[in-house]
Image (cartoon, rainbow, N blue to C red):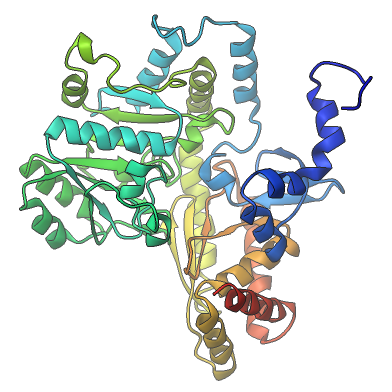
Length: 465
């Protein structure tokens, strides 16, 4: 603002005056590698507005969102019911976060969540998925009196110190030791679980029913058998449903796909926010909460300054109401089945396409080594430079040519993960499958802009070594 200009805060004016500096501001003041990466792969778009499953740029072109803010936008962007709830809670001018009263909204949201979780009894509200996991880790260790937590290779449970200790990806952990004394097992490895439990110091196993990295589901029967083993050794099962929960996989929770699984602690976040106000929740059994909060002296032994704030609680209540009214979970199951079936039908058509897997609207598309000599030599070139480059070669034209936003499922993986808003339907399925088919046709032609971009990625990968 220049001297002598209008005073006071005006958000619209600020964005009009400075919005064009977005990438420069980020490079100067925030994580400087993010704009660098976006410029490198051509993802440095300027989106002007968003609604539902779409963005629009300044020219009015629409972009289909198949990423949902890493799963945060379960209902899409700016759902009118959630927006109205937030306007209403602000207008109500509630006496929020006094710290020495009990407001109704947290209790109402807890009641609503527990209605979908009949074997669980109480809820702790924090502000994010990693906080929900941190809460579960603390509660499990205190309730069992044991120090060690087991997790699965390739798991992602968050990036704060406790959740990082159960993060199965070494790239996230490097340089941040010492962490908690926790131990990885392979997803589905019951023998490994038995071996660790015999040591007698395991508090819990924390597991994503479907791992976000690579979209790998726990093998059938694993969760139930793991639960039995854990309880036999007086340890707990923690289900991390931060990404898979609230309808993503076609059931309210992903663990519900396996009969008889009743985790002792369940972590949710992301979609509960409605895409507006950060929120995390840890649901647990009565005895665990009573042990942690065992006396009035321990009333604040675990708390969060912004936990249970009125805006987050109102957003969560609105989200669950919309999901019930619009039958979002059933819709995600139907649309997910349609999308997965249509993509799976392409596996025999394209030698670079290895597998399509997942549940509901959490789908992994894996690429693999082709059989033909010409394609195999190009694949080998990419793999020698850096594993995961081919998947990036697919993601880029989906955005640049077809205006569809997707992501590579993890570092050094040849997997694209689709986690779109749960509100998409057949038109969005048609658009994605048509675009993906065209990209695959281009990749299998052996030439064109896609492989030119691949050579650019190879040079970049080699330069970064």
